[in-house]
Amino acid sequence: MPFQTEYQKYLDPQVVSRLSRLDLIARLVVEGFISGLHRSPYHGFSVEFSEHRPYIPGDPLRNIDWKVLGRTDRFYVKQFEEETNLKAYLLLDASNSMRYASRAITKSRYASCLSAALSYLMLMQRDAVGLAVFDNALRSYIPPRSAYTALNAILKQLDASECRNDTDLASVLHVMAERIQRRGLVVLLSDLLDDPQNVLNALKHFRHKKHEVIVFHILDPAEIAMGFDRETVFVDMETQEEIQTQPRHLRSGYDAAVSSWMERFKLECREHRIDYIPMDTSASFADALFRYLIVRKRLGG
Image 1: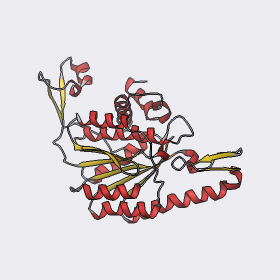
Image 2: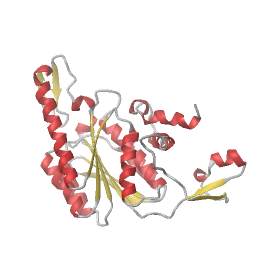
Image 3: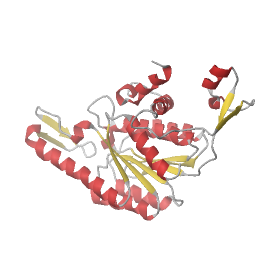
Image 4: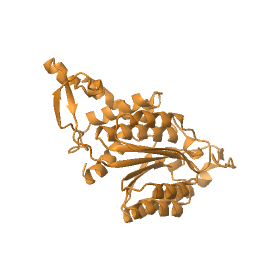
């Protein structure tokens, strides 16, 4: 197997969950994704460079094309297309409910890893990317920048973010919709555990402001379909309220309610031209990156 395809294993959240460094995760996930772009279902999509030119002392070493070096024994750097000036805003939910995990990776860690990979991919395309972290209020905000050094600030903030409070998703989204003046791409990463109508109204606020919107609805597999069999104590991670019950008595009603809840988001987002992408924490990061590229291509990337 060629070395490059080894990167593809890092598209698996279970593999990524064993790594600690977000800078490494971002690079490995994106390298794995790009190495698989030529395979179905990614045919027709690519992340390309405009041309190569000889290395000049002072050029960033990260831009050296090591494959060309191996073939020609000469140093060339990748010369990128002109900056597209797209501004992307990653809105990351860091409320307490995002701490949940029924397996190796929490919703919060999954969302952080995906945010890191998206940031890396966006900067590769010379888009400007920023990050807002929130729970029941906006906790931190890094304005979009297209310089590669922006990645360090984003990764540092992602590493520092902790899930401590309850959620007030709709209010924060309204605040961000008013704060972002220039039309851009808004990417929300959240479990959407707030009043659905309030959240949908806030998402429509972005559309009213002419922003493009992608919603990555991140849930744990155990939240999508109740997989508990024995008597269980369920604890609300934000209110600490407890309920002890036999899951078999709740399963059919719970699964139907979750399905209806997700379908509502799907239909209303489609109606308002919002890209709604349900993800669970066992899903390959490639699914999310590919869906982002579809939107990016539509925007002229």
